[in-house]
Length: 407
Image (cartoon, rainbow, N blue to C red; front, top):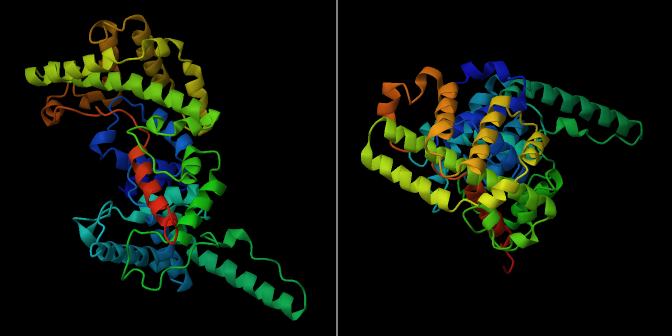
């Protein structure tokens, strides 16, 4: 996989986004069969920047920089850095297996043989929350670490000379810090006695990073609340009435997009079941589709200004392909004009055409092998914009903030 991604190594944001998308394809619940992931991710990034569906526990946001900072302190060279980081992360994984809390632990079954290490999963989030200050991709960071050492030595010499001349030495520039200078101290027993429980100081550091790095996000707002998030979707949060007007607007579009495109996914599964003539499965998907149709807020969808949705996605820098916009707008148009004929005619053909354009010869509608490998459902859960991950991260934060305090 790494060799196939070297072409984007020069662009850290593109690389991180690509790695996140590739990882999500491995998750059953986030399968994007109809190519709407860019819209989903742009809204999720607006609401919960720095998060991803493959993150698990919040303290990994500290585990990774602690490992990397320790290697920097030892002046591990560029030639050895990647291997040393890999070794220390695998040791962390093994140590966590002896902890009492295994929920969300990387390598729960694979142990030290884990293929995807926490640093690759959290690298983008560490940058988004300004815990990681270097702008480089993980590979570039490893390759450029010797230059970091040279810069620090040069600045140290300049400061010594300034002191010798009784001048006020310049402060150390931020660009020689790969990690936030107020990153909490590494526990003395790390990683031998490691747990997922944040100390109060650690939790306050992460909360403050969120307020500084993404102050207008819903994630930053929720980090300041005393209660833990609830509900299956962010718009079902018990105290959503306290959300700002901006957050309410984003959630309005996010909820309608989730509602509308859930039907497209259900139609896709129904058509596949019908195509391969699995009667019981076809009936199940038809029932699911009709249940969705009966609950559809048609009046609200009729008033929905979809151009405002595109304006929101543009804010996060996601490029929504014209074909994707056309597909989504066409599906919405069918919902508005022929809501009782979505499983036949042009509305049905739209779903099939979209999947075939995306997958080509691998389309499940034409490829017998793909039909045989289909497990009977794919991408049938509603989009929740990483809400399950966010709830776990915020629960960890809340627990840490409650250390040595009454909550």
